[in-house]
Length: 239
Ligand code: TMP
Image 1 (cartoon, helix red, strand yellow):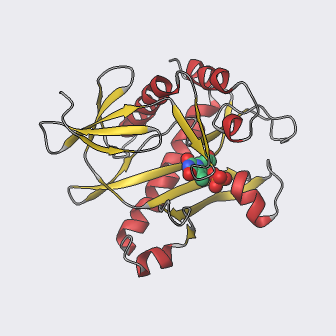
Image 2: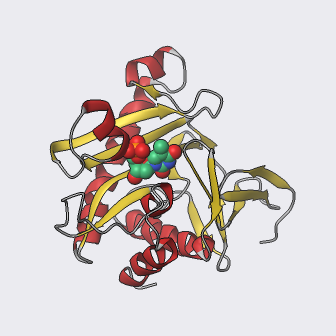
């Protein structure tokens, strides 16, 4: 399948049309942004790692019965995916308090949660992706009640499968963000699952002053060793 016109360019990926109206090609860049685009940089080798890692995880999830957009890797940076209409919500699932959750609720990073917390942000660069609840999302027509129920169900299933997958690799899945899309009347997993979109901590190191993270927090927080962290998590999953 060949790339046709550029359909969309995001912060970390470009999306191209193909001859097939139901399929697009995603091209992963090394560019990284954080703090709603205020912090910009490059993570050398990130594109191929995120591409291959996301594909491996989507394949694993498909096998477990989670519908995804994955349609086949083309090369190191390019993957064929189903063309979806992205639901403009970032769906976040948390197992351990960290990041904005810790700030908002005054809970120390590394505090285990009694049950997984699902939350949504409304995808809007202009508004800075504000926190939104399901009732507000339904009221604004961002998604229907049925769609929100499906999204929550998929998010929790993905959480369970990812926790189990990473546990084997001595990695704790602290939290992650997914995006879902509408495809032929259904809701399917889209976008990516990678160190850009997850918090991965070395198993058992939840003391935030000592934990080792293999994810984009190393870039967001200027912790150094960014490339090494991406390579390490990729190596552990067998990449
Ligand atoms: P947060 O603690 O900053 O809200 O992030 C929660 C999780 O979501 C974390 O794994 C990083 C991921 N995330 C994204 O993938 N994109 C984003 O724009 C944000 C804010 C978080």
